[in-house]
Image (tube, rainbow, N blue to C red; front, top):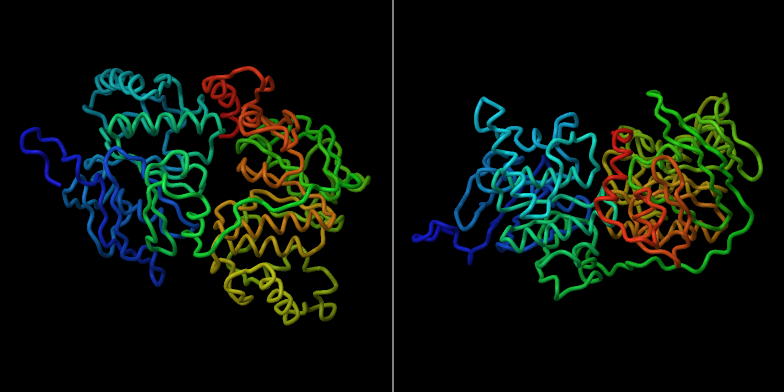
Length: 540
């Protein structure tokens, strides 16, 4: 689209972004296949799809990280070559990454001007930037202290800095990749208000997320990708989550968790005054008390980095601690020779770790080898005193892969050969098929396709109904609310409170996640930010 001859401004009737016939392969894997999409100016355009559908690759091509094998890019109607991110910035495109690109010990102001200094004299660059930052903050409700260092502010404020960086570089098009993954519900709501304000000021927003609720809440138009292809683009007001899920997966998906009320029995896990101090002397767990009964799921909610990981690692025998942990009334060793994972497994504890690739699998080993890790000393896997029954293990792995719908169900492929969702199913099958008395499960659906989420949720409910005690850690509040029978909320290494899912909501849980116990009183986003910032240095 050429600029208007009289004003020199872009023709607002043409797409802000038009991608035509974009294809990109990485070796034998075709990440994008003949994709065409039009994003109209002044709109919030969502892109949704399963893990590995090609969303991030497509946006990386638009931002100059990758070069397409075929296809054309038009910005405001003008064919544009984008060989690198500097060319994207010159074309008016800014990108806010899921993992922020900020220098932690620099100030907000220094991060905003980094790479965009207007002279060798930083003093003049800073002076000009300070005024521009003040204008942008007032115009788009992006208030942030320009003199605060990044390590002093919370993740929600850091995200504002990323947006300010793009606006400072005069971006008219903003790409946001999974922008709510590290935010509390209150912060996410504030972000949405900022994005609506940006849209109303004429900015164009591309919003990438795997959360159907967010797509329905914030976008004007949504494009759906599946297996590297664009399957549909629809007006958000003319669709619903069920239809979008079906477009993503290619079949109908049950979006709610279908479960009956729990029937909890005896207490399986008791935790009292649990404390962990890391190698730097930082107290990560600060007197945790909780319990889980047979036949129930206790969900642990919290912003990442507030002690949930350490809790799982202590219970799973990875990290040492002080305090008391009892399983079926018997104390566990927390510091001695029997404080390891093997001793935990012998006590009927199974552990699905948060990081499947580093703690749950050995990526270069075969699926059948991964399926018995941690349990390989079991006499059932021995053919004699020296050798393992590899043929028997492969046969058993094949059966487990079929029961857990691992695709492809081939035990002789390496773990690296499977998608993230199928890697997760391998770990789940290994741990859940042991009929554990206590299942520890961290982020069970992180990076997992929506169809696999449905399956994993049902497996957890089935295990609960069979009488297993389940401790679930997740940063996804939808997941916590739908799966849990009770919810404990953690902040700064402490349990802030417990709630029943039927008697709470995302707002109350979000305030507890920010360390605010007076959930009945009104609280501002700034108060939430200030509380979260208190833990920022520890998390970092």
